[in-house]
Amino acid sequence: MRIAELHGVRQFRLTDGPSPDPGPGQVQVRVRSVGICGSDLHYYEDGGIGPVRYPLPIVLGHEPTGEVFKIGPGVTGLSKGDRAMLEPAVYCYHCEFCLSGRHNCCSNIVFYSSPPEPGFFREFVNMPAQNLVPLPKELDWNLGTLFEPLAVALHALTLAPIASGETAAVFGTGPIGLLTIATLRASGAGRIWAIEPVAERREMAKAIGADVVLDPRQIDVVKQIAADTGKRGVDMAVDCAAKENTVSDCIRVVRSSGRVVITGITAETETPIDLHELRRKEAVLYNVRRSNHETSAAVEMLRARPELFAPIITHALPIDSIQRAFEMLEHKQDGSSKIVLTF
Image (tube, rainbow, N blue to C red; front, side, top):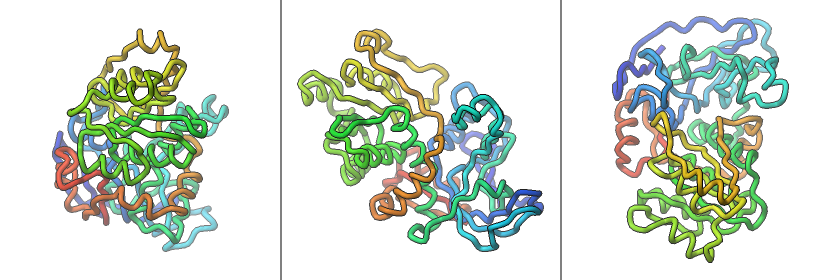
């Protein structure tokens, strides 16, 4: 089978490898499409995320769709050719966090694309049958890959719900920021500000539901939102950018007793936080780790409004073009936002 490995910083290579038969309780899926996540880009640019470093080469990719190719012993209810979205997280179900319903914090989690478990930038993958989610007929292979990042955006609002009519600011309108704006709008949010330096992404933010888009290179965002809200601030600020001072800017634009949600992942090992402003406002700071039981809601949102989400995927490229795809995202070329790799 074809495998795309990251074998050095900013260096992918295509190799061939075996595809062993699935074991008991497993199915072998033929991967069809895989979205490139911001965390994949961190590995590509830095060789890891923050202080976490793994020996190279590694196989990335955790936003996949595919079809059943082989069925392992003991698996029922699935047939060859079934279309599915592929959940990348495998939980133990018996640690204290699983037992308390916080599966995303599982002590024994196995996550495809986090070594030692390779991800989905490969043609065939053996995985537990329970990790297959039927792909609705309304969704093609590419659009189905959004289920995983959309579940993350929904998890952010599970941690910090927004009431009908409340205001929000979203820093960064890459794919996760766009999906966050969509979920805020679907949840009944009032006025939504989107902060983004890339013009094409600002336009996408407006199309998916933002009321105001601001270019942080051209305007003091903190002062502008203060002016727009009569110095009150927004009810919620979500950092999907994780760049420079975006966490602190979220704290500065939120109202007293408001909520700040960190969804983006920084490249640095430490992030500056305006703790005094956070303290003075008695604002609450939430941190998002993947998703937790939000997949079904994400699938239903995609199924119900495929035309809303389809523009988020700006490019679909064959796996042979993986190097080019990552270069496009790193340098924000050709209007790239969410790129899907296909087999």
